[in-house]
Amino acid sequence: MMFAVAMTFIDQTIVSIAAPDIVRELGLSASGMQWVVNAYLLSLAAFFALGGRLADLYGPRRVVVVGTVVFVISSVLCGCVPKGDAAQAWLIAFRALQGFGAALLFPAALAVVVAVFPPERRGRALALFFGLSGALTALGPLLGGWLTGWTWRAVFWVNVPVAIVALALTAWARISDRRRPGTLDVPGAVLMAAGMGLCVLGFQQAWAWGWDSAATWGCIAGGLVILVAFVRYEQGVRHPLIDLRVFRDKAFTVDAAVLFFSMLAFVPLFFFASVYAQVSLSASPNQAALFLLYFFAGFAIASQWGGRILDKQGARPALKTGTIVGAVGFALWAGKLTDLSMHDQWPYAALAGAGIGFILAPASTDAVNRAIGPSYGEVTGITQTVRNFAASVGMAVFGTILTHATNNNVVNTLESRGLPANVADNVAHSITESITGNGDSSTPTGTGPAATAARNAMNAIRMDFAEANQWVFYGMAIALGIGFLCAIRHPGGRAVTPRAETEPGGVYEKSPDQRAASRSDPRSHEADA
Image 1 (cartoon, helix red, strand yellow):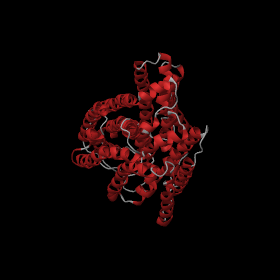
Image 2 (cartoon, one colour; image 1 turned 135 degrees about the horizontal axis):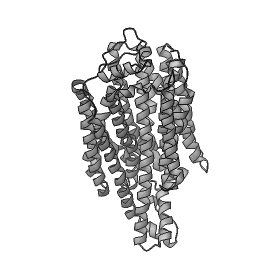
Image 3 (cartoon, one colour; image 1 turned 180 degrees about the vertical axis):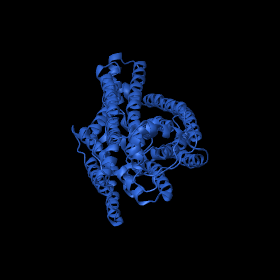
Image 4 (cartoon, one colour; image 1 turned 90 degrees about the vertical axis):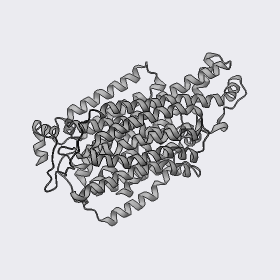
């Protein structure tokens, strides 16, 4: 199962390194490339809970196989995208299908791990299972940099041998399919996917439509209204897609909130940092991957430290430490972006990575351990949905900020070099959309005054892009600062590891919040039984 889920974690970051090459060869717009990254994250968030429910109804082994097949076929089709007008729609559509395959695969694989390990060994097994995700997320940029040297299409094709081995191991393991009674909450799945999709569409397209556009705010407000309707609908369903009773536990709610604000920065960072390195620092894809290693060095060390804090003192100290360290790290890193020196930035990148490392494992583990009645798979479905939706929102919001700030900076640069305001605005818009990270080789062509002015200003434009990225990194620091305000509301204490409700002897100590939630909801007695 660890081999099977490897693809889903690698694909969260591997495409970011290849982004400039993909844009250059296929002629994608800046927002189009962000959609290529975001379509995967949004689909994964929207359908993760559905994947967990399907694993319950039809058996986890069967859903693992189906999810793996869907994932690898869509990966091959992503790598086979044709050049031309259809390229952008093709790539976005099959990236979304990839996310759907991952949403089937991951919760089903988790259900297998839960089923085969007895309660006394399950905590260690799950720690290894989730710990692998950080390592594989770090592997994505390195693998992407190496494969992009051959062809960017290989970042998708690399999933084929992994999937073949995963399917062979799944067959060899002879996993039994344990089904659970219930019904599929199709209306809930539709409401959640529509609400998330509309919210992200509004944030993503704000650059093109404008923040004063009715379409922008109509999408955002419409998405929020649908998500509110989803919450109300789920409360009255006998077999809901997501059991919202867990949010009555204050510690679980705080864990989820901290995860949300930290993931606004975590996954989007790979895209923005790698494009910054290739545009402003004129780095190669391999050098951009090594640039991200500074972040992961801090992440890896702090992850181990955060795990020990969780074991000894509970999640609250780790969450407070992580959000403070991360906010300071991202803020200091933002201040160094305009130095245009990769070497000068590494301490701050490592500090930002350490902040995220302190947060992810303790928050995820504490959230699962504080579940009321649902199984590991169901509760993890909630936390993973929160994480992936936050990453998708972060990509959309920070992408809009980046393109808007870059355009304003480039307009000012071109006007200072004598271009009329209307011409400068048109040229700046074109440059903002076409930045690819190819350094000096990506300068505009042509003999007119606008092309000449833009060509002569390319060094200044690279600085303009670095200054625009500062807004993004400061935004990430603010997100973690809000995460700290959430973390200080954590009630503290150590949670007792729960047992799935289908297991004999599945009784565990509940916190006062959990006991109160159980008394106030008659469905909890059914779940406890």
